[in-house]
Length: 256
Image (cartoon, rainbow, N blue to C red; front, top):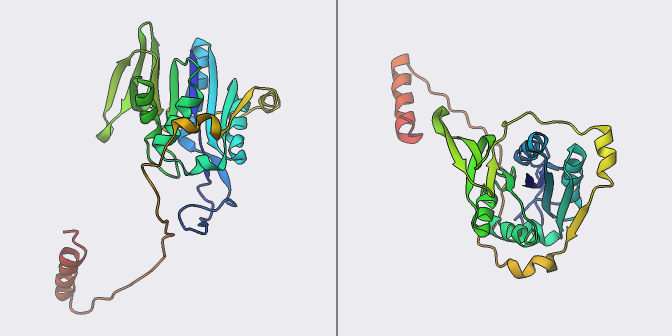
């Protein structure tokens, strides 16, 4: 099978947030890492390749620093990479990111496209679903298991309250992968060395500009949560304290 994995570079979870001058996004001088759900999508693609043979291609968009996620993927076993390289890709919403990806792979024929369930920064959980719509492919979300069948694939979806759903799907298809579907591997020294010689195609924004348009979603401003602490002491006899506490829970906090 030929599988495309969409990956993203995001700020590290424990990195201190630093807002840019406009306050609409994060400054460039923070530490970055691979989006965790995308790491599970890559691992699942590599496992499918090991079971059924084929090719795993990874794609990302963003400035030059974003190439690091592709290098890590190649070191783990991906066969080649595609980098939509430009600072302008950072500000694209999920709809335009999906349109840019679709334009970049228009000459390729994939059996499956994997994305992480969502990104750790925006958290839209939209790119994979929109990409499926643009390609006219069936899609399924929150995937916990994939089984190859003669007629296509059978996937296990995670639902609410501990329930799961099994769905039979034809190929090609787009799947958004849930974190925890597998156990992540580490890149070997040989893998890191071989990654330097694997193909990495760069796509300039001019090559896909005709496919993208104005963002349909826009972040106006971000705010770093302010830590505050307010303690109120209720005095009186036990019965009076209980009555006052219930009144506050019911009328002020509205949790009763």
